[in-house]
Amino acid sequence: QVQVVESGGGLVQAGDSLRLSCAASGRSFSTYIMGWFRQAPGKEREFVATISWNGGSTYYADSVKGRFTISRDNAKNTVYLQMNSLNPGDTAVYYCAVDRRGWRTPGGNPIDYEYWGQGTAVTVSS
Image 1 (cartoon, one colour):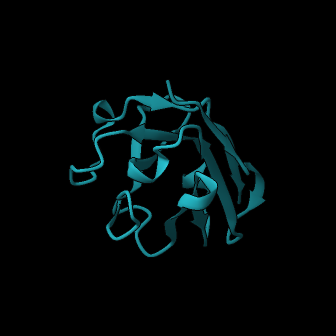
Image 2 (cartoon, one colour):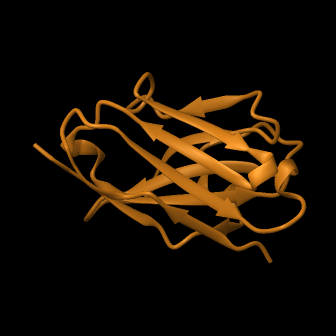
Image 3 (cartoon, one colour):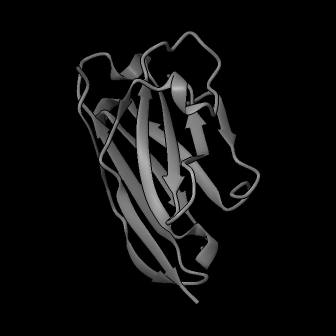
């Protein structure tokens, strides 16, 4: 069982930046693929970004490419999502997820992720 806890959400204005953090339990964190997803009110959960076990590969949704950066610190069992140039369309609950199959190529399909946090809410006002 892997515990996943997100933090860092809040209310910001358009153009602002925010950094989300996700802490995952377990001594094998450095072998996990980690992903960020989001769900806006009335919409389905969508992929945001993912990172390989060693941080060497990252992938982003087109909607956030160039504005968001995913990174990880394996010594702290933590993955981050730096979000810049936020706009109201980024308003959502952001979820962190774990795929323990670190040998795979990271992807954006939520069914590949086994463990999920409770989410942290991000609201961007115009």
